[in-house]
Image (cartoon, rainbow over all chains, first blue to last red; front, top):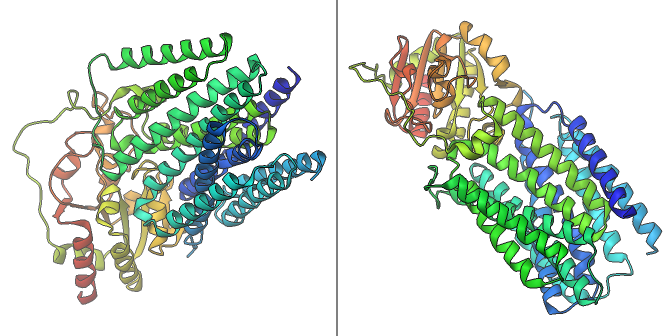
Length: 93
Length: 459
């Protein structure tokens, strides 16, 4: 159960940090924030890599985890790139 | 790489995610913030690949290459007007990946002969549930934004009851999966039910409510990643997922507030279906105007405010708007843009489009700043917005009662560029059109703004 408690610590504290850090977002940044946060949710890539690369389990495990790696990579690479593309357009008068 | 080094790399990565997110909340630092978050992701991925536990490379390398290729292509090729669709797709991929990670972990554990513990079972079930709902929900949202699926709310009898039953069924299957003997078939049932639930949850939600849906799904994709992190026992996934969950929830709250509706109302309200729409009858007339007349008004005004809406995005009229802005500013007219928080189909949609056409962001005013200024505005030009400027929102018994609106009717003249008198998304008539001082320019937004620019040049 130690792992669960540790995970819950991280979860609760990270949620609170998230709320604190993002209280005031100017509307101009709503889309980039969402899109950047979205790319960050591709962190599941790490989990996909660990499962896909472990060599444990049958073909199904490899297939599912492999598709997960591909999907998460699309999310991560595409998400950060398109956020950057948006942000470089923003300029002040 | 020794295990300790990997853990340390994860800690650094987690810290960078927080710093990156923080920097994403201010225009001056946002780009570097996004860069920091990307660097954090790269660090975590490289450290994981260098770890000794990765022994089977073919799948990993192929999947990484395919994913990178698709991601780069999508990010480079997408038009800024299609950004809501792309965000929805990426969301769906993230959620789907988390569901797959949780599933694969469950299968892997059962195949090694170990009984997946209660913890793994519960977190796998949550990961599959939230991840799959995010996946199917995001793709329905994509379909609605792209126009493949109708933007109108899709309703059927006993909708809520059915969704509730579906959800209870899901919980039942999940509990069975956790307490019963490990059975991979149950995993499939769980995923299938969650897929249907995601579809059913988004179908009844109409186009104008998309900003709420897109940000809520964003939040879900984070929670799914967190759940996958619990399932495989990886704190970095839990941390980053929770951050995204919080960010998405904050945006969702902002969007709901901007429509004066609760999340439950958006989720189950099937708004815009009609019925409550209070369309008055009577022979009210609107005043039609021409580009020539409007151009003269604009050219000799002191202050002009543009109010863009989804119609501007559909007509791709942001570049014409910028040209008109330049011409007016050359003449010494003070030009600003008033932007409602839910204008468009995702949070900040208008801001991105105007930034694309090179409008400086300090000219874009949010509702709180824009509203007091309308009284001092000579001409307000509404470009493809409707419900967010509808004064019916001030009537206590209208369908959009209490929704904060842009007070465009307080300015001396209001020009509404619109193709026809058709009601907005909420299905409501808009008294603004019939008010004294209002003028209708019945044209496509792009053509109208182009014509205005030509006329202003000659004025």
